[in-house]
Length: 570
Image (tube, rainbow, N blue to C red; front, side, top):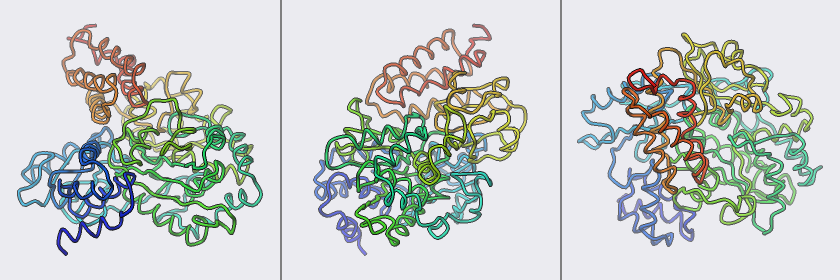
C-alpha cells in the first residue's frame, strides 16, 4: 500500500464529519505514519473544513502529537515525582546513552525517539513509560529498565484491588478485567428504567449526598438536576477520564478492572438528565484502559444494555470513547469540551456553566470516573446505605491512590473517617524508612508532616487542617527524598501544562519555576516571592489549574521554611 492510499483509507472514514472529528483523525494519521506532515494537514483541512492554521495550532497544543518526523518507535519516560523516586532519571539517561542521542532526539537510523513524559498514571509500577510503534497500538510499560525499553515491549500489568468489604473495587479480579458475564445485566439501570422516573433517580442521588470525586466535590444530584432542567432538546453526559495529575491513578484502575460499572453509571446519568448521547474523554496516556472500555462498550451493545431500545424500552444511549492527546488542562471540564470539539484545550470563562452551556453549547453533565461508578450502588441499595458509609460530610466509599515510599503502593478503597496514620501503617504496608512528609491531594495538594498524620481522611477533617482530598492522591516521601527536587518537578509540571490563555497562570508558573530552580542556593526573599506568585495565580487565574498551581509550593514554604532560607538565614 502506498502512503497516499494509506492516508486515503484513513480519511475515507471521516467523510461528512466536521471539526469535532479532528482529534480522532489526527490520532489515526499519526498512528499510521509516526507524525502529521504539512501534506496530511492540508488534506485533513479540506476533509473537515478546518483552516490549516487551526490544525497546526491543535497539533502544537497537545504533547502527544508530532508534526515533525519521529522514530518508528517512540519511548516516553515518566520523570515526575514518583517515577523519579524509583530511578526514572537514571533509566532516561542510560537509554539515551545506549542510543547515542539526547532526550527529544531521534536516532540516526530513524528507529527510536526518546522523550520525557509527565505522569503516566502508573505510579504503582514506577518507573513507567509510554511506548508507541508505528502502525500499532500504544502501550503503557510498567517497571521499566533500559533493556525493557530497547527490547521486546510487554505492557501487561494487573493486580487485585480492594478487599472483601469493597464496594467500587473487586478483589476477585486476579488477571483480567471484569467481563459482562462477571458483572451482570446492569441491574441498577434495569431498575431505574422499569420502576423509576428520571426525577426519582436524581432525587436518590441527591439524597445519598454523593459529591464529585474529581476534586471539586460538587453535589452530583444537584448537577444532574440543573442539567435536566435546562432548556434545549439536546443534552450530553460526559465522563471525565482525563486523570492526569502526578500521583493520581484511581480512575485508571477502575476503568481497567470494572469497565461495566462505569458504563452502567454513565447510562444512569444519561437516563436521569434525559439524553441519548454520552462521551468518555480518556487521557491519551491510558491505552490499556481505552482498549478495555472499547471492548466493554461492544459487549454492552450486543446485549442491548447500550445502544437503541435499551432493555426493550424507549431509552437509547450511544457511548463514544474519545481519546485525548496529552494535556493536563483538559481535565478542566470546559477545556475538555474544547478538545472534543476539535480545538486547543483552552478553558472557557464561567458563567455560563456546563449545566446550561456545555459541549457544543448544549446542557451537559460532567462527572469523573469514580463519581459515576458510585451511582449503580446508590440506585441498587439506596441512598441511606450509601450515607451509612463514612461520615456525614464524606458519605460513601472513597478511592485513594498511594505511591512513593510505602510497602504496597496502589489504589485503595477506604471508608472515610480512618486516620492517615492508620491507613499508611496498617493498610498499605507501612512507610519505608523514616517518614519525612506526605503530599496529600496530588500535585496541587498540601504537605503534612509526621506529627500531622493523625488527621482523619474525610473531606471535612482535611479541610479543617488546611489540606484536601483533591485528586485522591497520597504521595509518601521518606527522609531520603530531596524535597527541593520534588518541588522543582512539580513546578515544571505546572509550567509545562499551563495552557497560556491567562497571564496569571502562564507567567506565574514560569516565574515559579525560575525561582524553584535556584532552591539549591536560594536568594533572600524567594519565599515571599513564591507566596506572592502563588496567591496571584490562585486569585486571578481563569481555571483550576492556575488556582492550584502554587498550592504545594506555598504549603512547603509553611511546613519547611528552611528549604527557602538564603545562606541558612531568613
